[in-house]
Image (cartoon, rainbow, N blue to C red; front, side, top):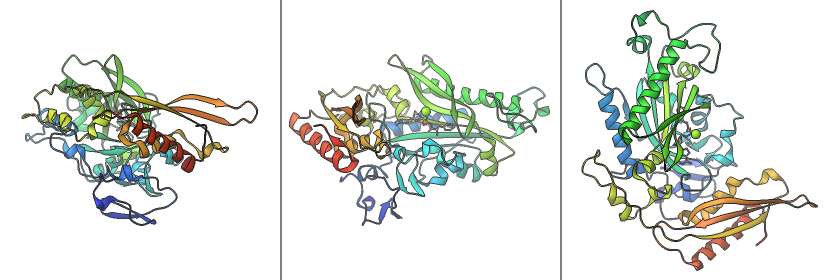
Length: 419
Ligand code: FA5
Ligand code: MG
């Protein structure tokens, strides 16, 4: 791949260079050259890229809607923190237990056992709170091994938002609120609240959080946008919610959020405050806002795509004209899985398809599974849909890539082709 600057290419066998730093490889290393080439692209900082545009619109909204006593913006904005983080930052600092499934090597990009490409912007919550910030937005690229379709891509962008309140700030709007307390002793954890929180504090926090996010999407989409809240779970917030927005007839999840775990605030030196946090997917919002049909388009260098976002004023509406869709070609692949079932995961196959096929691949889906009645061996069949965003693919080039995938699957995943 020639996409990334030379400084990011792998050097030697024992180490890997990312953003000018060298990291030793070990048996956890699974960052591929294709992924490495995306590190440092920083689409969210590229002037007039749709992700930049949506970041600027959200910044402008927060700057004008939330001002301090002297007219200063309440929220500070951070968009330049390196995506290379410690495993401790990405998981431990957020109270994610050592055996939690989200840590799986198969779901993340590890530089080595101790270092990874961040899987979410929440990885920076503790350091930014420790630095003394009470209200901030943090934007960055995040990396996950995931399925392949129109709304999932191994690199995407999130915005984290955090707001902390001391007793006075939270209760100042309540009549005689000074008598209320944020924290209580000897309480119990319930579906509504954490053990150390008072119910009054949590209800006000939850109200402020949901109101802040509802105002944000109303600002972005206009008053007609349909929104709903779904209860969910994160190890670093309680209670926790997801916001869904109605898009092309379906409910689409755009963010996760909740009341920050008090233990996290304690560890960051802010134990006298309570707070809320959210993490939203910028691609998801931009796809709804501009009717962008496929997440791969954000990486397009095609002028027909990029020029549509070069507006004079960031509030000017963008009327996105989708590029014409080129015809898809599909091809199936079946193989016997290795005898030991731990030796193969579906994400390993998705990663391989991505490494070989790149952005020619629109979608990969498991279409059939079969277990041999006598030998007990299992076989799987995947359908790969090939379609390029910018040109028509020929049968010939698709066949070459497909054959390359067949060979690589046998060589690298220990499967046995039924080709
Ligand atoms: C998180 O990443 C949490 N860190 C969010 C959070 C922050 C919760 C602070 C509480 C407090 P989740 O994995 O659901 O949660 O991702 C958040 C959002 O990122 C999703 O709602 C979605 O908009 C976006 N997202 C997730 N996976 C992908 C993907 N593969 N491609 C594009 N966008 C994605
Ligand atoms: Mg989610």
